Amino acid sequence: MDVMDGHNDLPWRLRVRDPDDELDLLGGLDADLAATGLHTDLPRLRRGGVGAQFWSVYVPNDRPEPQAAIQVVEQVELVRRLVARHPGTLALATNAAEVEHARATGRIASLLGAEGGHCLDNSLVVLRSLHKLGIRYLTLTHSRNTDWADSATDTPASGGLSPFGHEVVRELNRLGMLCDISHVADTTMHAALDTSTAPAFFSHSSARALCDHPRNVPDDVLTRVRDTGGVVMLTFVPFFLTNPCREWGDELARVEDAIAAPWDSPDFLRIRQSWIETNPPPRTTARDVADHIDHVREVAGLDAVGLGGDFDGTEVLPADLPDVSAYPALFEELRTRRWSDAELRKLAWDNAMRVLRATCG
View 1 (cartoon, rainbow, N blue to C red):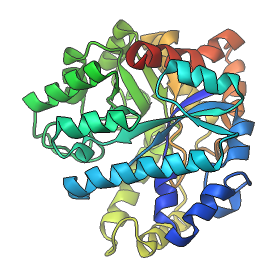
View 2 (tube, one colour):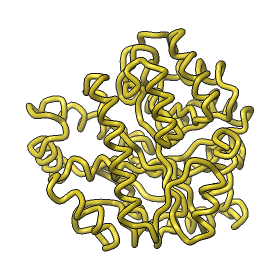
View 3 (spheres, rainbow, N blue to C red):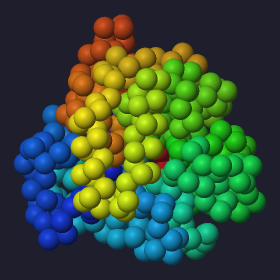
View 4 (tube, rainbow, N blue to C red):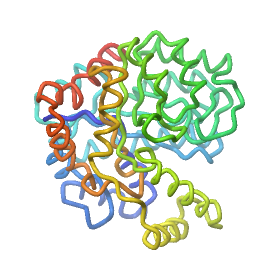
């Protein structure tokens, strides 16, 4: 079963490791790197059936916006180096035809998604430049507001989108880029859908009805996803799957706020990991992910479900979905719920490809 996944944070994981071994890791991704703590490498992508991956060219939103604009370009270059080191396994792609060509030649299509509109530095010129670099989705916010869009996890400031925020959405439509409304406030979801002429797109989100996290998609938005012919790429992050894990994640966030070190520094990562080992999260499994998939299917329809695991973007994962090799375990869970192979193909590949083709060509 071929998989198109909407979000993987491996590029940032590689960036924050020792820079001296970054290229060795890029070359070493053809080995099983589970012992390093990474969720992603080429053998496990193959075992998981991943045929197309949106690599997140993420930059933290605590960076000043001019710096974020530079760093997102550096992240694009990192992915390009990754593909260049593994030309027999990976192929850059910017549209549906290029994805299908990669698939036909036995390679994993590598698409680019920018996570957080802070990387635009309030400039449509930067947005156009990112499109020219091959980026094919923009997540309007990350965990904080931009000057023009409200995040799901910040204090509202724009009432959804400012006038410039609506311009950003219109420009995404014109360029043929996916307007990703994961991470944004409900008001921003609705404002973007009011303006956009393209199918709705969530790169890595879950269902609010099952887990009351502001990052998740409420049912009134799911009906609009259905009406636009859009897709929700369901994530595997436990914080967004169950309310006990959401509460555990809130406590982890308080611990993180108290750490007197930059959030991506070795000291910060060590202290956080020590706390997680001492205070393990409530158990989640593929059944919890399947529950969210079933809910989105029930409200928005079979054509609205996709997969956006967020591997290497989270410290914790469901017990039986530990890395990118694990998609078949999710499919087996769905088969026990009488999902047919044709329905699973829609979830895994066809729905996301339809939205990519309709938006990016």
